Length: 448
Image (tube, rainbow, N blue to C red):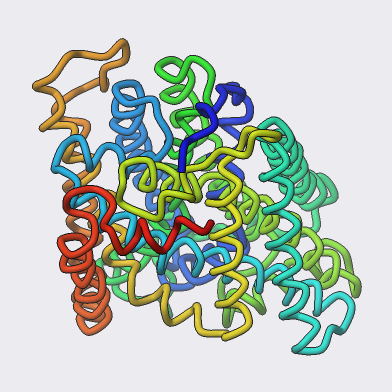
C-alpha cells in the first residue's frame, strides 16, 4: 500500500519533555519509595539510590540524544538497532515490542487507572475491565486525531501531574503534617532493615524500573521539530525533572509516614493520604494516582506505535500499518493496532505475568541500543555528540550489566523464557521478512 505522505514535524521541546516526564512518572512514584525506604532503612541511602539511578538515566539519555540526532526518524531504538546491527536485530526488538511489551504495559496501566477509579466509585470487576478498555480507546482516538492534539493533551496532563505532586509537597510540609524525626537517623540503617548490599541491589532494580521509559521519546523523532537540537535537550531535561520529583516526593512521604509503620506500598499510600487529607485521604490520593497514570498511558499510546509504523515501512511488518491517515497525518493504523492488542489483554487479564517475563529482554535491548553508539561513531558525525564519550556509554552499560545480573539471579526462569520467546522471532524473520515483504504477507494485506 502506498504511503500518503511523511509524518509532519509538529512536536516542540515542551511536548517532548512532557512525553519523557509523563511516561516515566506513573504509579511507581507512590508505591516504590515505601519498599525502598523499608529495605534500606536510611533516608541517606534512599537518596543515594535515586541520585545514582538519575545519573545512570542521564548517561543513557545523553547517548540516546546522539542516536536521535543521527537518525531523526520514527522508531527510536528500532532504528538505531537496524543501523548498527542490521534488520534481524531490529526485527526482534519490534517483535517483542509489538506482541508483548507495548500492549502489556498499555493494558497494565489502563487496568491500574480503572482499579483506582473503582476504589473511588465502587466499580464491579466487569466495569473495571470496561473502564480500562474505554480509557485505551479514548486515548488512542485522541492520538489518531492529530499529533498536535495528542501532544497538547499530554503536555497539559503532565503539567497537572507535576502540579498535584507539588501540591502534596506544599500541603504536607507547609501545614507541618508530618515529623522531621522520621528522618533520624539520617545515615545509619535502622535495626530492622535488610543488610546494606542486598538492600542497595533491590533498591537499584526498583529505581531502574521507576525511571523506565525515558528512551521512548526518541520513537517520535520523525515528528519532532529540529530533532538534533530538541531531542537531546528533552531527554536531559526530562530525566532531571524526574530525578528531582522522585527525591522530593520520597522525602514528603518519609516526612508523613514513619518507615517503621510501613508494611506495603499500598498501605503506605493510604497512610500518607490519611495524614494529608484525613478520612477522605484514600480517595483523594486515588484520584491523584489516576491523573498520574493517565499521563503515562497517553505517552505510551503516543510513542509506541511509531515502532510498528517504522517496521512496516522497512518491510518488516504488514505494509498497511505504514499508511498515514490523509486527514489527521498520523499513523492511525499502527495506533489502532496497539489499542486492539492491549484491549484484548485487558479482557483476557493475562498481562502482568507476560510483562514480568520480558523485563529482562527489554533491558538487554536498551543496553544494545546504547552499545550501538560505538558502532555508529565510525560514520559521519551529527550536530550533537555525547558529552564524555566513551565514558558516558561505558558507565551506563556497566550499571545496566549490574541490573541484568540482579534480574537474572533473582528469577533465572523468567529471564530465560522471555529471551527464548523473543528468539522465536528469528525463524519468523527469515521465513517472512528476510527479503522484504513475503508473498504471504502481501497477499494477506491486499484487501486492507
